[in-house]
Image (cartoon, helix red, strand yellow):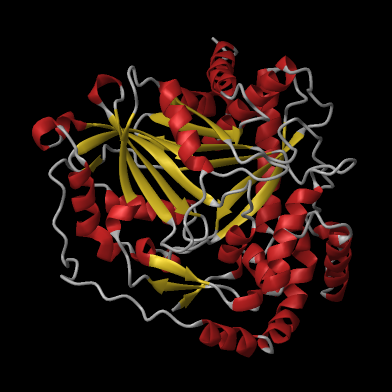
Length: 489
């Protein structure tokens, strides 16, 4: 058995009747390069069967510790059935983008079955031009952005002909023995004496950084404690407080997408030119990520103006950052930290907005580098499992209460993808739109994946909070045109 890390378990803990914890993607394929010019459900199943031995998380099933005394475990599911996880459907004619987005939103709104491995894959027919789509769902407890990219590297090929694998799937599969409840209870009880020891060992390095943990920094007093302990440690180490990068006191204003979410989602997707974004990067002396964040900021600003709720203060974005080392490749799970950065929604001029974003992102990266690489993992491990699960939900809900500000307004994630064509079952990938997660207090998520010469945007939001989510995708295109128009001759 393999025990979940505290950070992995936290993605299970945030789930509720209205919040799901899975992430995934919507991949669009052209089957004209596949044998016979078509891809069937059996082709997709054959692709999975050929590679399952290289994708261990696809067979992991949860085993909970009674009473939440310790973190759950993964076991190799002895009753694994591939056909349960891979499904097929078709859009009604004409099968346009709006219908596809609605279908993705419906699938994303449904929780994964915790009695089985936590993933699903849907083959969707009926798209224009004879194309088909693959929608995947995998629980965030199993993967983060980088480990998800590793899984994509195993599922996809560099040529339509596919590839040969050195080893193959065993003819018969024998999973782990399923432990009984008494055995799991015994594991939880045995772990109880170790928890105070873990807390004592971690405390000196963890307490000064409490304000980087999403499940902690919204709790009253956590930020003050973190800053005070950080200063005390600097004095004890003989370091002047002014020599240490100060963490700004940022407060997120409230918007209509920062309340309690419903069980339902809206999804929108689209692509922007990567060469156009790189031209802006070069012209203004910024990074590609600066441009992506600025475009997102501009689109959100336009949406807020259209709904007469543009706040005076800048919005705050949570930006996930991978801390996975080369040695940790192939280990799956979560190796991430986060940055909190202001968005220039309060600036009217698009060029000034880009310059503000460049400086804000640079400052956020400097602050992030000043923290221990695994601060978020250490902090979640510092908190006892039963308390951690409740803290994760309470912290998200606190920002939705009257008179309290949300922890942040939106999640923005930019994940690098392959710059060369890739294939699945012989069909060439055309676009790969991420499908992420929203929570109470942060009902909007914008995730971007680069592929070939374009940036694929996947936007997901609470259905009630942002019923016109498609206008945000339109706003991204407008924002790109505005920055291009402002370029010097």
